[in-house]
Length: 131
Image 1 (spheres, rainbow, N blue to C red):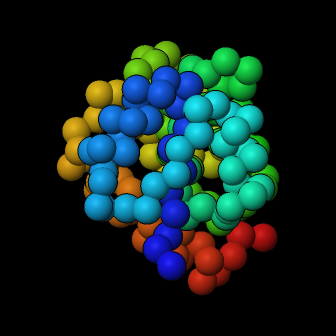
Image 2 (cartoon, one colour):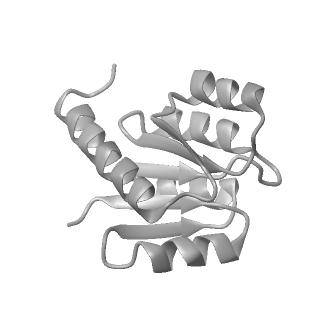
Image 3 (cartoon, rainbow, N blue to C red):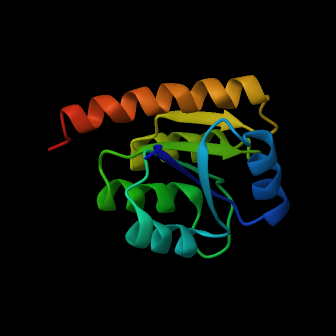
């Protein structure tokens, strides 16, 4: 079975665009907010890589990815956001063991490269699980 990647963003058009952009490259699941993302992880996880937007209603990306790390510590987490707040970026890195911080808009080749690197890190994580 292919390693699963979960994208979480409150904008359906962004999720649909990512799905079209990466069609055939990866096995992708989508969730339209953090709560649905957490439910997806509980039901279908763990995912190899979880990529989240930062600004979402209810729970921001940093809080969501911190929860992902608690639920599935081997999962590689990335933030894909248009937010330019340096403090938010620092909080995300410190709170949720962030592997990559990617800015929207993100070129396809940059996103594909980051996901491949995330998958390689995930394979290392499951070979030597986090304590």
